[in-house]
Amino acid sequence: MEKYYITTPIYYPSANFHIGHCYCTIVSDAIARYKRMKGFDVFFQTGTDEHGQKIQKKAEECGKTPKEYVDEIVADAQDLWKTLNISYDNFIRTTDEDHIECVQKIFKKLYDQGDIYKGEYKGLYCTPCESFWTESQLVDGKCPDCGRDVYEVSEEAYFFKLSKYQDRLVKYYEEHPDFIEPISRKNEMLNNFIKPGLEDLCVSRTSFDWGIPVTFDDKHVVYVWLDALTNYISSLGYLSEDDSNFKKYWPADLHIVGKEIVRFHTIIWPIILMALDIDIPKKVFGHGWLIVNGGKISKSLGNYKDPREYIESYGVDAVRYFALREVPFGSDGNFSEEALISRINGDLANILGNLVQRTISMGHKYFDGKIENKGFEDEISKNFIESIDNLESIVEEKMDKLEISSALEEIFNVLRASNKYIDDTTPWILAKDESLSDQLQTVLYNLIESIRVCANLLKPYLPTTSENILKQINSNDERLSFVNNNKYELNQPEILFKRIDVK
Image 1 (cartoon, helix red, strand yellow):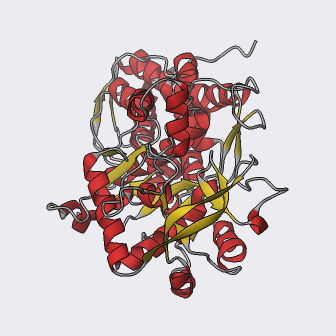
Image 2 (cartoon, rainbow, N blue to C red):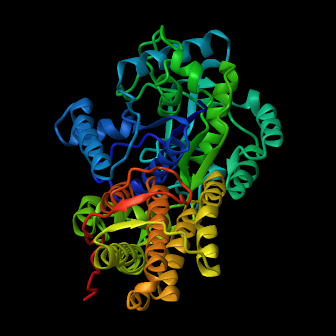
Image 3 (tube, one colour):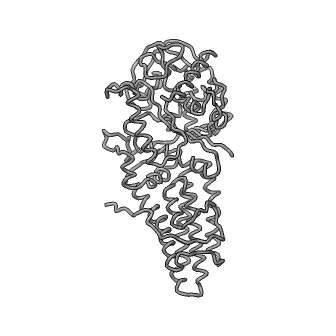
């Protein structure tokens, strides 16, 4: 069985997880579920990045230890992922003992081979981003990532020889043109960071102590990015007594990250792996941001909502569908309740829900819910069945390109075609002529097969809805193409999505 290792970034444990945080995880979950459906041995990982000066300060403000502070937030994050039906295989925390041991071994290994050395850091530091910047990288004197103030720091530190591997990294980019996607992110890395010249990276701090201690110099804790990035291999048992998962799943097939941290995952991370003589991940995809009503999400702007409020109001699959369908993956996108309601009413209620309910209702009305293929053929039905049979390969092509929104659009195109098939074949007219009974039953059979195939293909994106649809048509057939000889005993129809009054 072919393996597939997919990761989200490990998230900073924010007290206010918002819909933007959910976006990356929902997309990653859909990809992981799709790969499982296609027979891959999937390892899907997410988690939390819990060390650093920022966490220590917030914990002190709350009168808690850093571990107490992050424990509460991590529990809330795990509850949110459960509510969103996220099917991760591992949730890693950088406070996990096995991760700590792995980071310490990596730090010592790089030090022993001369890739880490002690020096003094003098420069500009952004505490919220936990990033060091040069004067030339600032934008209007502020952090180029978050726009906040930076401040000068000077302290003893260990450095990683990032500059030593610059030429090797550029060569890797040239030999692996698909390593970074979208292509715009790759151009940004080359032009803005690599070509101006890489500077050696500060990988330890002494001004705070909430971090992984350096084993041979206890004044120092490991700098957050060397700590955080290695989660992708520490979780697999790298440098541990049992490294079977590392041998099985590494290199990662896909790192999905926000565009603001592409730099760390496509410059620092591959160079660390080169220094460790480990394979580079096959692909890093830098997605855009999901923003609310055109602006940054924050409580101070009054546009923050706990994602569970949206889920409670509209349902988990409606929220998942919007995140996956509304925004082409890689681009920035806007989230608003108006747009969410529009997708629910237009796609989920009108196209999907209406199709399922009226098809099952006709099955009960005309044949007491017992439907089988009576072999009627005409050109309309032939073309309709062909569109159903072509759907699996079209979706696969889109998913292989990480065009998730387009994959969903293709499924809904067949659902639209199914509604049109009803209009074209007019079952209510066929039902008036007893001699057309076989034709009528075949039409309904074709519709139910379309619903079955689409429901199976929707499993990665709308898992709860798919299960509900298959229950209503009373099918456990997981095949992704039209089947001629199924027999159906339909259950009673249930409303999948209620139309929402915008008022």
